[in-house]
Length: 516
View 1 (cartoon, helix red, strand yellow):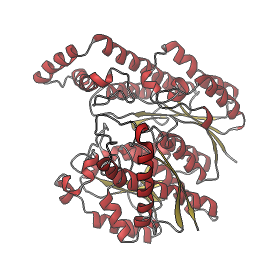
View 2: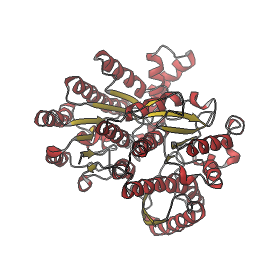
View 3: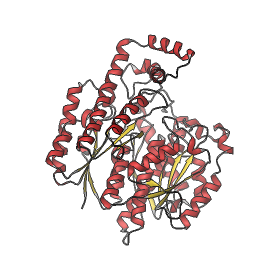
């Protein structure tokens, strides 16, 4: 059996468990260091992780490794560290050692371009970000525009004012850490050129069309192109889904499968939309995520291995929880998106025997309740093969594409083992319950009835109200399953555990099984 060693980005379910769930949908084995991971700002013990990797790769075929975990002990520690560039390179050098000792091991790595959030909060950033976050983000935007000679006179004046409003010590600390992290990404590309890393994915964590992230992306892309490595180095917006993407790529490599995918949108204008927290148009993002996962687009659905149905907004991508309310949506939602026709198209693909993955990308941080409601009414949910609609558009795309690719491969195989298919449907049910049930419906109720929500600027710690929140959410989860998901899968969905991995309402953990 093919063995994959997986070092995740962090301990959250999306980073750790989603790729593990996908692996359980296949005949590949994947192991991860569950017992060695950190907790949010508390980094994992990197020395012990290195030892674990060295032990596990002895009999492995693939190593999927988060460089942020390997070097810093997780995604949040990578934004807070005070480690010298020399120490970072020493930790990263483990990959050289592994390559030397295991020349036939396939090493797939991912390393983030650090984000610059637009809001003021120290929840996942240094303490000073609570006071200067917005200014730092604005400085990042304006400095990148200056580099590209695109600053207007008004923006030039604003740039001077913004720069003078940020203490030098604060800006030096933030830029200094970025410089070190950027050096790590450059070294990772060097490792690809030297044959240490076989495939490298560099996601831009929460970004925009201007800023530090796109400036660093340009430099990294130029380096990769200089070495003629664009078939091995992939750079696009994302973060938490990267483990899913690289698992899909390893799966395709192990099975010698190059999935051909037809893309269908809910709006004619949707593919040209530049989503919030991303730096490129939606269609280019779809192509990049698909390519990184091992597939490519096909220009007709008849010959494709799978159809990716992408539900998209037109007037940018709707961002806040409030626009889950229909009356608050932009006018284009009612004129430029035809959900009924979109549903009919999906139904047609399914009736023709196509594997269909649904990327619910119209709203950030949750599903479009009205689309899922329509599909439920038409009795279509049970026939969709893969679904995602969580957090950023990159998170959604990476997750659903990986699951869809797996289902497309096994659909063409003579033996479709029950246990594999059963686990696949459980992951599908998990995505519906979490992305639709919790993120789009229940969390909204929770934030209205209890003062625990995320208002776009701050998170609320649940410690003082954990019992109250747990009771509310568990009750709502059960009601949602009974109201909306009884016909979504064959069997009964039983939710066994509901928890908040970072003790806040922004993300949730769910354990479920389908009982027949």
